[in-house]
Length: 61
Image (cartoon, rainbow, N blue to C red; front, top):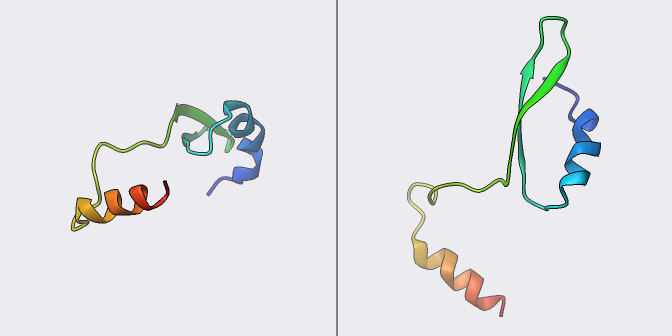
């Protein structure tokens, strides 16, 4: 497991509360970021009733 605190400066520069970093171990044992994403997903978790999500979002108004 990498020490993710080393990636904190990069994460702070992105300026979003939601992000994912894909990292890969290098041959010398170091780590490199290979992809940065907005943390979005293409669907809801299995078994989650979509109404639960939308009711919670509506309650935030």
